[in-house]
Length: 150
Length: 150
Image 1 (tube, chains in turn orange, green):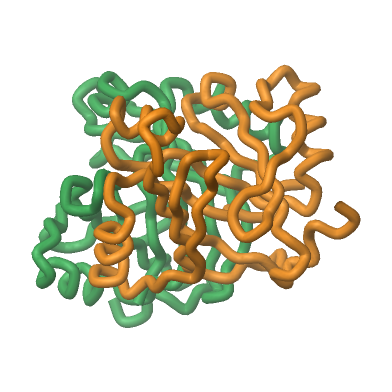
Image 2: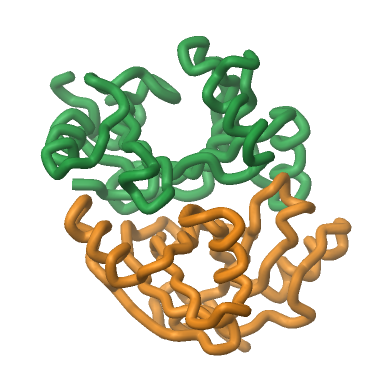
């Protein structure tokens, strides 16, 4: 079961400038930053609200760290904007398996590590009416009660 | 103050098929449907989770009802995908005014009526790092305590 909008992923050319835009315009503060070398991104998570499954919803601002990353290629084609959306679930493995069984292409064989120690996978946008869709199970320590037993 | 991700607006060519995709793939059910003749759209709201400001987060699926609507033109350029994101606030008028004062283009002189009797306005995507951004104050009856005094 998918129980929340976990985050909206927004691709940008300059992470520091985009973080400053969201702070100055709306007052949103940075909750967490990290670099994911595997995905070739540097990111900032802005926490917007808590959710009734015990989790939270974030904006995830993404800047590519290398020219050959998928986000760099996406930015070159599309310019800045919404790159993907993510739904939170207690069981990313089970959800990915069920959804794969419905004929939707799941991009990873097994979930990988995403923001803040979460476990994530992606669904092919062409199978999802044009929306690159991520599934996320938060790390246990974030208070959602997710990620147990992994 | 913006207190939640209110919704993610997703443009599609065929609302019924897209609603069915979200139901069959994830189990998301339709919470509300309506047609907004002014905006030239037919929409379905799928409620994903409650938020800690007393509101909720939705997916808003949008199908154009006429060729000259902004969503029809957007679909012709971009194909299906995420069209806009929306933040919830108790005071869309005050927020719009403050943000306009920071030099961001606000698309309506005064907020207009959006989904479920809410009051909404939009910020120009070129002033928001490529993201068409909506501000929403829910109708009073939805239990968020918003919309009082308007």
